[in-house]
Image (cartoon, rainbow, N blue to C red; front, side):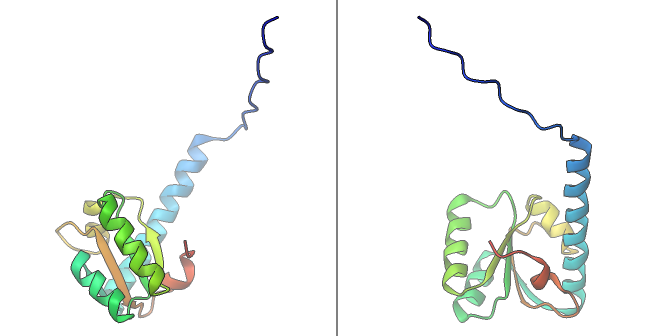
Length: 127
């Protein structure tokens, strides 16, 4: 006897356009909050300065781009865990994160020390 075939997987009817809209809306939401931080808050851009602020315990939130190297990403996450700081994985690459920060160069890591008028720290879920 041949073994019975596994039952067919139940596929939920999900509209792919809805998911794309939600992702785009949340991306725009993060970008607008980042722009407000750039205007009214304090932050550090870059890997080295981010590690310094994490070591000093001044960082409130760390944002990492999607194409940051894995070793750097894990090291930053480790430092953030020790400093009890939230980490947000930005869905765009480092060019997109630099553009969201209002810069003309690439930014792979961003540490927010003072959010200013923005509510970015309260709105980001801790991961």
